[in-house]
Amino acid sequence: MGQIIPRYLLEKTAVTARLNKLEDELRTLAAHETNTSPEEWVVRDALPATDFGHTDERWVNQHAFAVANAWEMDWRAQLAVNRYAMFYGINQNVVNPSIYGIRFRQGFNGATTLDSIHFRKLLEEDNVIGYFDRLIYRPQAWIFVDLIANALTAIRAEEFEILTMICEKYGDIVSGPKTVV
Image 1 (tube, rainbow, N blue to C red):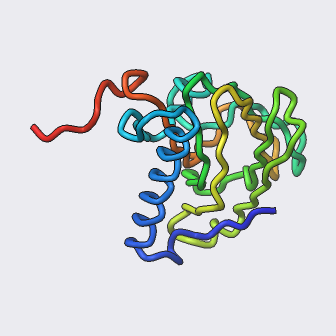
Image 2: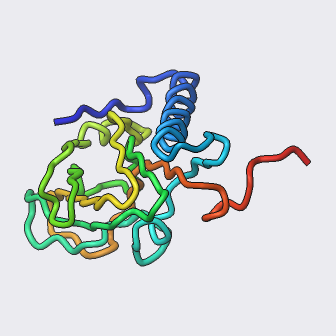
Image 3: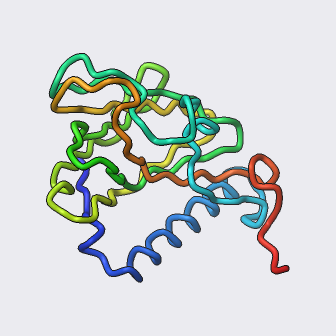
């Protein structure tokens, strides 16, 4: 099972350096696997509706939990052609969250478990952001996400962000490279 590191344990410069490293890694991977230039690729934050088919662009649970303390599928989505996704952390936005863990699986039916992360220890902190080892999904891969909650939880009742980077070619969502005006 993966470990989560609360953000408060990291210096701000370490967080920035980590995010820059992850962005470079994702852009380099995409360019290498598609035999293109890294400059053709943009890395941006994930948009839940646009990238994963959620109801809207907020990160909320997509599933009503029927059983407490049991893994349940929250959502699954297939990545578009030429789109990579990297999951690297969690940000809980509620005072008393019921959701306390996430499991990343792969495949239409989630046959392969990539990692499970519990984040209850974040509740003890003022800043409920934590980072875990990055997980990368390649183009057209099926992303299968399970969550676990300690209580019955209504659909879209709990807001939490799965920190995610999307890498895609310029022109899909972002129209062009950054320029100084």
